[in-house]
Image 1 (cartoon, rainbow, N blue to C red):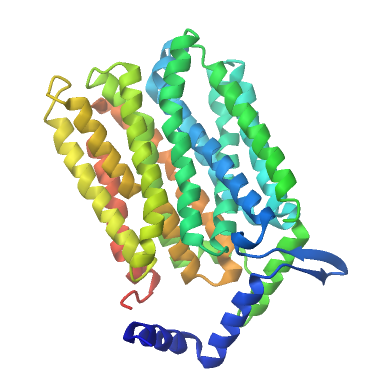
Image 2: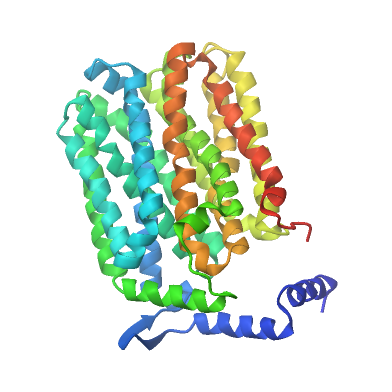
Length: 462
């Protein structure tokens, strides 16, 4: 046995004790075996946690990937439509950015209702309901309603996305190969985000600025996602969720009941939520406002600007998929995420200096902008899945659903609040200083991650 293997065994023995190690390994083996048990006098099918052993598990994972493409398409819709919406509704960009504030209210509602909905509907019901909430927004806005209705229904978007995020993240993080699967999940979000800006730009060109076509397309995707969730996740009932909660409750010493108040007072959960608030806010602010910045400040046409935005999302997708496999070569997920966070800030600083000191007349301006945004996307990409896995390894199992629900929803609210603030601030200062605001967000999440061991009182020295 190598010295590294000895160190790993000694560390595991120290953390768990010899008996606990064997019990843990035995439990892991048992979790990868399909079985039917009786729980509360009802038969309950327990599937394998290894996707290699189950066709149904593969189908469930692919359903999550499909739903995440829809979320990616959704998150880039308003940002790509801002120039069109301001013209058609005769309002300024600050009014349109109120959409993000309504999404925040939806995120907040999902955080507060996540555990209750899981307990009453199971994962199947939560995923189906989340797609229905998305459908409400898409159907209403396909009819080009008055601006106040257009904005108001985005509350349901925040609610739907918040529920999908927390449900899929918790479930996938419990499976074998969770690092790789989480990377792929959020890579599919990137795929949706890559497609959205150029697709919207071309639809507007082909259909004389008629944005309802794109909302009809999103509605079809939401219906499909709901049907797939209902069919493939039908075994993930409220009884199954109750059984998993009971198992986690039995595994915890003291078996304390988990309440929303307990989770909100958990310093670790709040620290991770703050990190994700800035990270997701920065990511979505780039996606939502970069197109407007390139058009208004740099003088590019919409299609050229949309392709630059897409290169950012292509990089993000590549990073989430490829770096998910690189993460396992670091000592732990915390170290990996620290590296990715620092590199994302460094590359964006290069972009900030470049864009503030050049114009679109500069030689190879588009090429260099595409390249820098692509590279930055690579390092920004894996931050959400890697930080989520880090949290899962710190927290006890009975806190997972509530904690990730809070983290995804409160952290995800950064996708609503920060783009709204960017829209409000740049209305006063103009979009010229957008790169500086984004740099401040990236700096903030890097600082929080550096301080995370102290904030969470966790030793990452091993």
